[in-house]
Length: 113
Ligand code: AMP
Ligand code: ZN
Image 1 (spheres, rainbow, N blue to C red):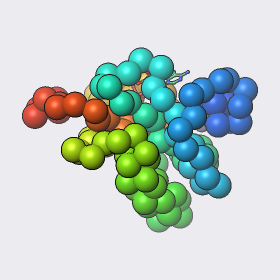
Image 2 (cartoon, protein in one colour):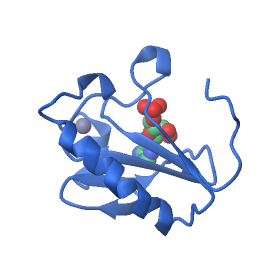
Image 3 (cartoon, rainbow, N blue to C red):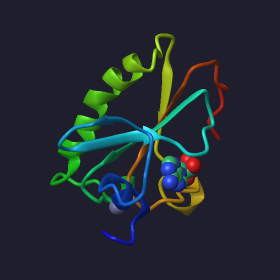
């Protein structure tokens, strides 16, 4: 989708600080980090949000969770990390392309909302 920011990052139209890529997944550093390590992990396939995950497209979501340990290890997140996806207005989703925030590199608050 040419009007989707993350599709444009994936296809290289908009530059990003890439940390991982394979045939299904693209991961890059968040432009406004909220933790010492803040990476966005996105499916190359345009899926709008977690509310749009189905039996037909969920394999890529499983794959994202398979690569998260590798990315976390590469980033040195040996003491833990947090994975978050914001879905819809109540959760303040600002980019309508499914993405998982990988946060780490220090102690985080115990409350998430
Ligand atoms: P969300 O609010 O959950 O939809 O997350 C969107 C995230 O995308 C925010 O954390 C933004 O800082 C991040 N973001 C927006 N534009 C860019 C960009 N061009 N490169 C990297 N991260 C971005
Ligand atoms: Zn997209």
